[in-house]
Length: 271
Image (cartoon, rainbow, N blue to C red):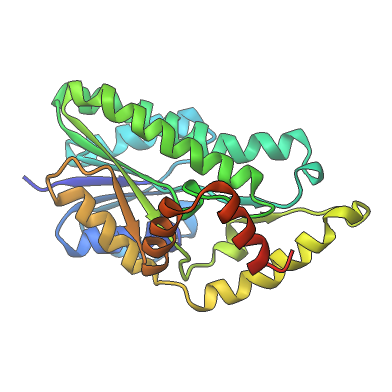
């Protein structure tokens, strides 16, 4: 029997690379995105269903899962990949902006998972892979909202691992470092208020650091390969770092206390 993966946020970046990687490995792929009518690449693949799913719309989630099951008979792996990053001083965000970040990265992830779980529970098998980040292990200046969501993904994944063990479903977390995607263009929400002069040194330092980070980033195909390994290794391993920078930063974080890390990041950013 051919295995099937459902991927959220498959229109670009890690999601698209993962759809192509699993397709190349002979899997059925349910590639979901908010605007499937704009997709002209994945729609040409055999054994691939491109369909609409917006993690903020429960009806679209349920419909995508149902369409995938109708087409391929089952869902073996769910990849919760859809998300974006909101950065900037907390005071620069209105409450709607704060809610949108958490609704997309956390509530949306939970909604998709909840929609697929009855199917996996009935099959007593499946794997849920949640895309976190090194930003779910440590925080950087002006990332209060983004890091808050990724720390949440880490915690909810740990808890789900306990309860889903009872129904034979595995939970995995993939933690990428800096990745060469159009994240900054398409999935990046930066807000600032220049009248809040106290924050502007941090704003300038952050914006100056963004481009250098992307110059040494790993390709999204690397993350896709890590995701494939997590889906197929048969283990109960929970966390998978993706990228050499991720492995190094996570290892360093384990050896540093909070004050040491805080001072090191401030020094590196010239704050």
